[in-house]
Amino acid sequence: MEPKRFMVRCAVHLFLVKDGKILVEKRKNRDYCNNRLDVIASHITGNESAIDAIIRTAKIEVNINVKKEDLKIIQVMHQKSESYEYINYFFITDKYSGELKNNDINYCDGIKWVDFKYPIDNLEPYINEAVKNYIEDPDNHFTFYGWDNNWLIHNI
Image 1 (cartoon, rainbow, N blue to C red):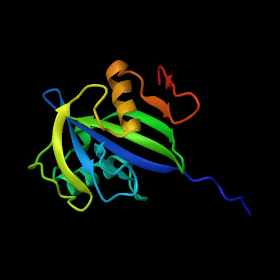
Image 2: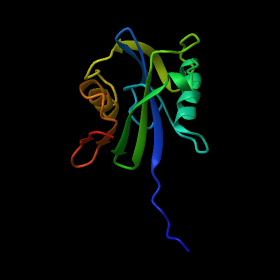
Image 3: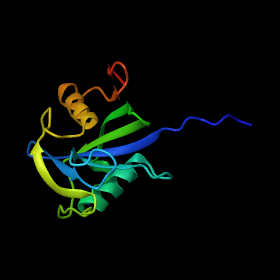
């Protein structure tokens, strides 16, 4: 009998950008980071790819359709939080169809465009770190966050 294996959680995040801005949501009624800003994001539910998860999430949260071919993976982050470890997939696109609308009114207090810069005030810290890593060194696609030493791995 095999020993019980460690399980990691996986999440997807979308940097939806337009004219030097990024779309953010204000979280509410959550166990984690209430009243903080977030990007379009969700857990991978299982039996779906990271790409399928972010396409699903964009439709559910903000009423837009994004195409697989318009998504670019910009970062994979191995994150250690107080309770869990995560593998976070960060995508970026400036292409979508549909009218932006807050579809997640029970958990989102509104959506807005903010300057795509680092830092973004009140953005969840690990997402701000992903913003920083992307802006400062867009060729680095694998990062760590929440460990004793955060670092980037070059040339992946």
